[in-house]
Image (cartoon, rainbow, N blue to C red):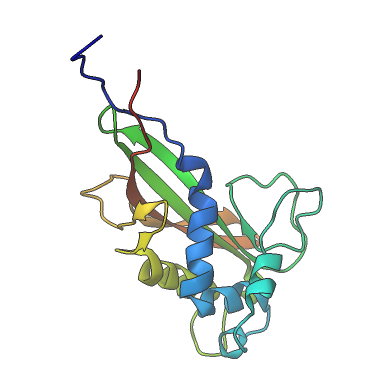
Length: 187
């Protein structure tokens, strides 16, 4: 119909790629997190930086064996882990519509480490160091195809950092917020 105004609607097409895009951003913007994920030794923080290929090899891309990976795009682990390791899970936690065109998205980044690996030789803990580095890397950062991530409860009540895990895996999760607005203009 001539002169008809069409309404824009959010299709949330960016949400399935949030984990991938955040991980890609982390690969380019933080070396310490990757070293703490890969190396189990207490001086992992002092190891040489990983290559892009080494970082990619740490990212789980499906399949039966999850034991040799350190980065996952969901919050579910169906196998009991019996290996002393550290891993990171990045995933959209909640998607709340602000309007028909914008969603308020909470993004969780959960770190788990075996209790035997948590203490580092620089008198810090692996979990707290990774969580601090995630905050430093992502808070206020504009991640391509994701948006600007913030760590602020005024923007999203879910933004916080809290303890998670069960023995022997202890951990912490940090939750950031961004807006999603993948627009479909309708008919």
